[in-house]
Length: 330
Image 1 (cartoon, helix red, strand yellow):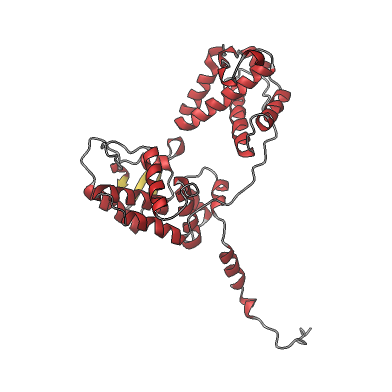
Image 2 (tube, rainbow, N blue to C red):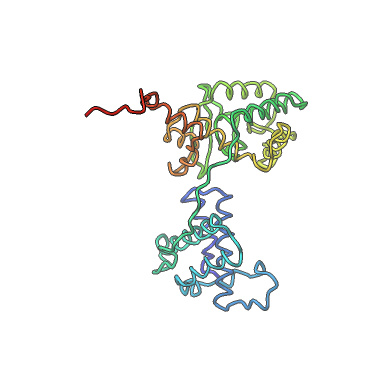
């Protein structure tokens, strides 16, 4: 069995010392479990002919001696396994390998169980940068119109309009919106959002967001729950219910629900703030709650019209030849 239940200790370390969310911690656990199952097969601890499915492999068979036997050859074999057998794309491979690297760094540098880190300096898969999918300004208006024109009762319409308005104007994450409490809406037109790693940040509410929240609070049912947005059971609305709500209105607006998910509304807010609001990269980073400005840069894409406008704004763009034979006088 893994000495001192190292994997559980590692997950506790992520939660307490690094402030990792429970969802992210689960992903680490699943990724490392996949790695251990691969190692048990590769090292011959488990006979692949005796199992029907890799998910049946018990990682309690992993011990500290097995962990110490892992070398870089094993690591690169795992990368190949993810690519050829599991058919993972580069983004998924990058995440899974990063999880294992973090685990081995913990064993080597945090609790001194290992002297040698086999995951150190492992080449990572290249991730192609793609422009984020987002609603155009006209499509964002259509989405808001779809909520206003719905036949929902007054409470649900006000709630749904407030949620979608906040997504489109403030660019917060799904978990951040569902986690909002009434007390997080402050009197000076700001809201306090708890983001990744339980880090709080303050976001100013523009006129539309403030008005939408105020209208909802006027009809919000009485509840013992401190959550800002309530379900029909008068408890905190779930992430899944928010996703279904957004999907409903995206369809109603005549848009593709497979293309425009809740997270794409976050992309939309960031893109519109950058393109129309003149937001600089650092301000956008603060609003979105990104650890690194590199993450924020994916939102600073510019449309072809923007590129055309930038080139045409050059003061020399109006310069014309008086004749074909015009020459520059030296």
